[in-house]
Length: 376
Image (cartoon, rainbow, N blue to C red):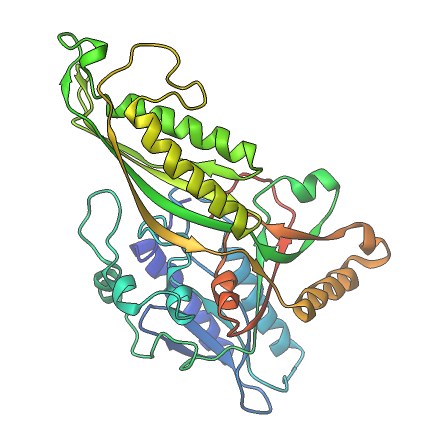
């Protein structure tokens, strides 16, 4: 399915969320980033404990990605109402804006503003990918979700935050498990890599006279994979654009995304440093990893790096992790020990942004899923 952030489809889902939570007795507040806080009162006043996730998806996202965490929170509200449960302090559900970073290319964007990791100005001015001119602020205003509440942990404090999410991978299924109690999230960084050479005719320009940006980009992408594998990291490219885009013209301009991930920040530093040095040498025609050992050496290209997003490795609150484990075991019964395991999340989620600044005690728990659904 496709429900990109701040699209008409996203507005429809937001309208449903606000209407449903209000009908369950919640007060809803919307901040400057369009984050929706649905709050159910408790006996005492204080920062609420929330379940939360997101309603936006990737262009071809899984139908349970994000929305599962929202539905689970809404179901918890319904269950408390059905059994006349009044909690000691407020509880609630949060819909975080633009978790995916698919349309506006910073993932966990609005929760990042809440946590003080991103400025409101940068987030509001972030422009959509694909050549469009819409910004997050213009689209928030268009769909009616540009709230007045300050987007900040100070204005909307959180006591604890839990997020139910599909695993999006093969670990639980392969181990015969049902629930993963997430201990933390691996580090990742997003970059835009620009390779510049020179346009030329494919029939009249021999190999030695070319500055082929596409061929160079292909070598860089392959090398990022090989280098990441060497350091037990991950490297991926999901977006690639080139100019001029003609069958009989060698491209002089290529731009591609680079997503680097590792279990710890130090190893990711090492991967980043190595790739920056290697990319420059490969583009200049030097032989790195045997990538320039065959074929004909051309005129070379230049390479530029732009860092788009940084998300450090994060480790969650032990009390919250144990809470997830005990709840899962209570539901799964006598065989629970064999069906629950601790794990590290390979994908970023909004509660990751929350914990980076320690403004809330957080944890994530994963449900077994047919893996392969997309996520930031």
